[in-house]
Length: 116
Image (tube, rainbow, N blue to C red; front, side, top):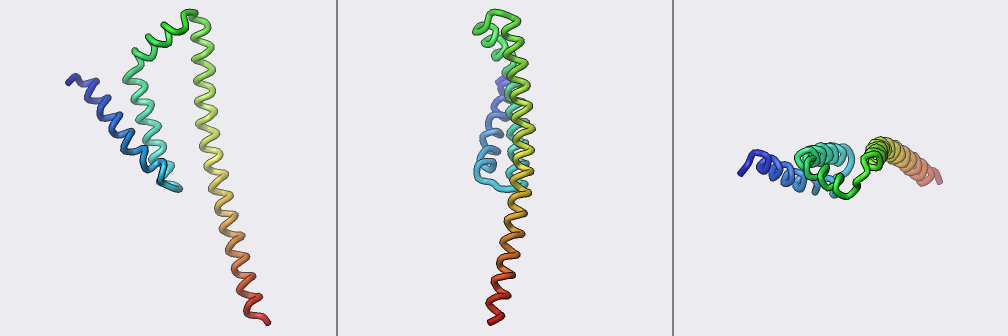
């Protein structure tokens, strides 16, 4: 087996294994596994870059059109990455706020139960 094929098998298998905790994990552990899967995906793309480039050039003959599509794709990917990080942070803040409000309501309820 060629070295590139071995790396491809290792990357694909690892990506599959690390993808399960991304779907079923929560919180910080979920984010760590998601970053690992993202890095493995980038590695997977780099291993297949020649094939991807050949297909892209065969599908879109005009070089300027390919450049425009590639730039749009890169901008869109970067924007989605930052959006995902920002939404994750806002979700954590909202969860903390809801937990705090829930704690306050429990304290108020317990105090009214004690006072007849």
